[in-house]
Structure formats: structure tokens, C-alpha cells
Picture 1: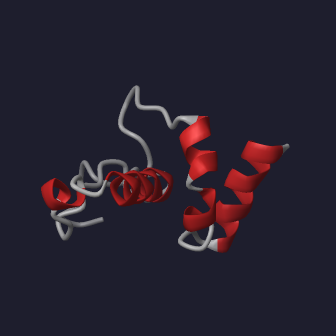
Picture 2 (picture 1 turned 135 degrees about the horizontal axis):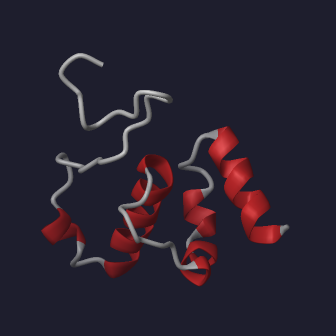
Picture 3 (picture 1 turned 120 degrees about the vertical axis):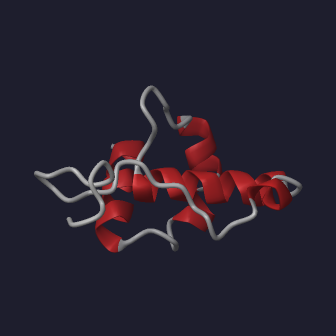
Length: 84
């Protein structure tokens, strides 16, 4: 936790404010389908900003790509929420 105050929740050590600095978002936005899939993956993996929501239809639309990029527990949780 040293040096990461403000980025980690003390109770669960989960990153709550993640910015992906290794991706050129401006360039990726030129490919809307890839950008949307990447953005959804980031949101599912690192969480949402305050007030942000994921569109269920968009998630279902990109599910075939996303399901292989998520960890097994997260994949099963999202699958349960989408189709239960």
C-alpha cells in the first residue's frame, strides 16, 4: 500500500481509479468495434468511474470477444448477471 494511497481501498486492496497508460486511446478510437470491446474489458476488469454504467446490450454484443479476456471468476459472475 505504500505509495499508492488514493488508488487502493484499504479494506480490499482493489484499484478504484485505473487509467491505462500503455494504450493510445486516440488511435484505438479509429476502430470503433475494437475500442468498445477494449473499453468494456477495462471497465469489467478495473471497475467503473463514479456514476458510470455499462450498457447491457453492448456487453452482450461484445461477449464473444470479452469472455476469453476475463478471468474465470469474473467471467462466470458477468455471465450469471447477464443470463440469469
